[in-house]
Length: 296
Ligand SMILES: [Zn+2]
Image 1 (cartoon, helix red, strand yellow):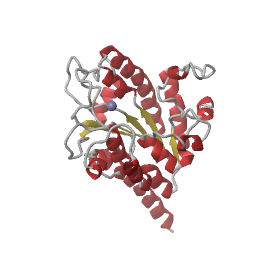
Image 2 (tube, protein in one colour):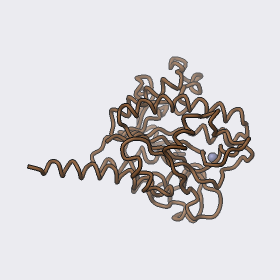
Image 3 (cartoon, helix red, strand yellow):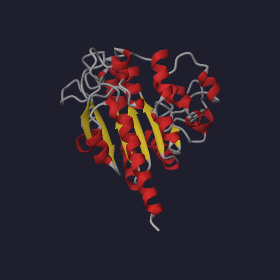
């Protein structure tokens, strides 16, 4: 089986409202996946306060309730204690142990893993990627269309890399699809939704969601035809309430689309279930192929 995991930052579930840009007019492909192929899951993790990125993402990618482990929701970049939880046990490490090939499709603007390791501030996904360095994508990968920029279109890197052409989001979907066909598990992280949610700028949030939706609608067609399972979720709410600058207490969507989708959705009710559910799908496939091999 092949899984393409779209991590989208700061998108929670909230009823239709004039300040909620996550609606059918702005992002029909995302809304359709939410309506037909998702369930709401908990991002609060039983800990007081607003959910934050570091503990939310660490929980999503380890299966450990990191907010409970830290005693609070932690913002931004994980500190040493949270980093050690991620380094000890994460989705990439677990997949590697199972012999699966993994790609982290977001291009880092670096030439190699050593440069990334030397950086002082590392996101949850960066700590995870460094634990399995072959997952890391570089500028060379981006230029060869073996990676995707975090903004999809590459428009934000034009001042630094004028030779790397701007592409439409549909083209980024083609590139990501090609990557996902070459690996058992592919991760793509998009955080402009959270950035635009913090901006309180409704038109900007709509523009980001519209652009992402053009990417998503293309990608959904491709993965459906290829039988790749699409998994998508968020670390906490934010952009669905443009009247508040902060994150929200809302549940987030857990989307599973394609082979195994019902089993995946049934297994996940909170961020901490995401990694175990994905691993269970790979183990299930491993067990059934071993069973077939043992038939004389
Ligand atoms: Zn945020």
